[in-house]
View 1 (cartoon, protein in one colour):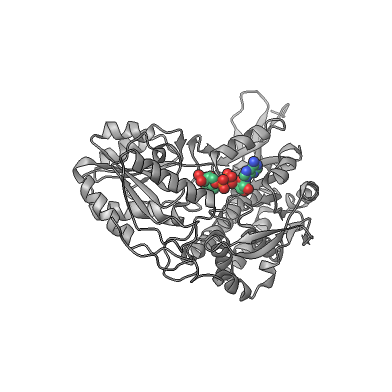
View 2: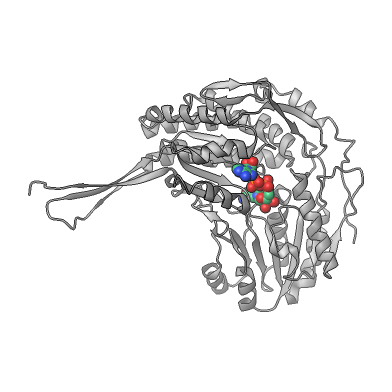
Length: 504
Ligand code: NAD
């Protein structure tokens, strides 16, 4: 089946990102200097930044090396003694200024995100607001890191617990949310009293460096927030082996998460990991079909599918399966594919060619194993990073798409018969990040939300993230939580103090 049209072709959008970047008022956002120890490092060694939609070079940035990483760690360690001494309310005020600056420069930050990451501009704008909201959240949370007093088991003693900042933190961040993932980690670390060294994905350095410009402007002292850009392995090695780095937070693939976990073993760091997902999306036959289709389309195609919360297996009860597939294909057909800087675009390019190729391999594998592929025809002139939205029906569990995370706009729809059966199939994954349930039965919703082995469950909604919720996964989807009242504790140590021999 062929649906929809490709809105803009590769030649049409050539030069568009460069034009937008040249028009930015904040020229420093595209200067491409790394930020170490309060200084901007330009350097001769430069890496290029690519517009993933067109493959064009749009900027270049300094390439940091292991020595820069060592200097960053030393600067962070020095700054810790000053930053941790500030009252939480004072740190919160600085974080609040940073958030305000993000909002003030939202449009320019969004252009950077779209230019280097590819997502539609409207989604990039949302990301800036989402990221700034985490800074505001943690600005306030820093004042609530309460300890406790424990009823004593020893006569004449006072037992209490206090929370203290852990020390220098490192954050290795992904390219799919190049602003928000930095804000979510740095907001928590800084509010706790910890300096943070960010190593962003090499595909999206501009967003990270622009955040550093705003951090400096907001009054974050030198060494407290630093950004190292360059080769991931070269830069992460010193961060992993240095004993002064006490916490590591990572968002990305499970494969790299495992490597980093192994890499922190020698120095026993506190580690939080937000890794891959493989979200099951369950649709029961008692729901209003339109609502479920709308939810599934949102849960599949947001961020062009490059989202760890993306619905990877859409299970639909057999009685409504055919109607669901038809309605989903029709809704999918309305999505406009093109350059993210073009106003009507819903689906941009994949940020990395490897992700686009993985999507194509999953489509081919499903077709070879008897799945039905519903998609538009690929325009040859569209860049190779584009994947047109596709629906795979009659999917079976042995297909690649059911075993590995897709991370692109390809939807797998599978029929099921009973609640018991679909629960077992949904839980039969080593991933455990997010799951969705659409049903009109309150009893069923309660049962399933209890029994699903996932860190986050959306019941009759595809939209549930934000600063107040504990974001994180079970099983191989990660360790620890971000956001909420729990996120700040990834950057804190608990200290128990016993005062003995007190006067009666
Ligand atoms: P990745 O895990 O390789 O990259 C994420 C971050 O890790 C980037 O900053 C990268 O530079 C860094 N990194 C990569 N290799 C490293 C290493 N050996 N040591 C230290 N740092 C390293 O992710 P990817 O290859 O770009 O994407 C592949 C898949 O990962 C995607 O298809 C998706 O399944 C998953 N992913 C998930 C998320 C998420 O939000 N959970 C984000 C990005 C990617």
